[in-house]
Image (tube, rainbow, N blue to C red; front, top):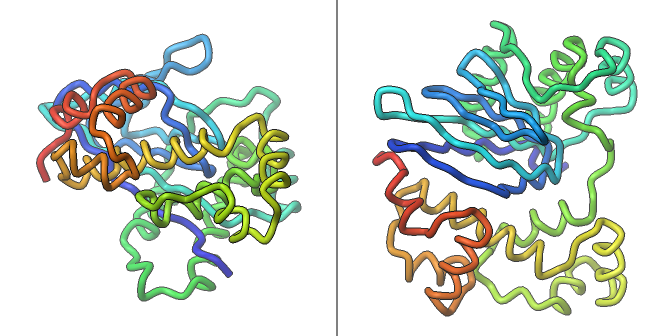
Length: 260
């Protein structure tokens, strides 16, 4: 049994605008302080601390993080374990036909999310993680929204690939060596990704640039070192890719991040 979930903290002390932030796993975003202005398809949605943002795998988000009294803080819960078919059917029977990414947080959901956040996963068996995550899935199914999080109850190959690459984003990760890891040929891997409307270099770039965001959130602010940590030999190339992806330079993003 593999790791069931991960929690990442994001902070800002200034208005923080980002675009095209790809989520490779079904995720719940919870605002703790401040608010998030989400540009969702053809509308704008303001998400507050009393609401949860539900995002299916491969969702690409554009948003503004809005500090309140100089502080923005959110928690992103990324889920790797899948719910079973029966609980998905329960969710569909409880939910309406119109899907919305926003869910009002209940006291029970808050308790469960706080527990998942507070656990030391290093000292916790993956079996125990599984039962806690399945309990959360049950709560979401009873609210009729779990199927919005898991629109496709299968893990895509690109998700498996991104999780593998994310373990060591700075490594070279040649296409041939990665294909060998998955015990498939180079051509088979290219074909699998093409079926999911993506390419190997796109997945690798997504992983590396998301890793850069996480490093900056942890206090890394040397752009040259960030470039190397994300597999880029050229600081200029890294900055160009980062701005092209997210809409601002690494230095500009660093300025928005709260000091821990």
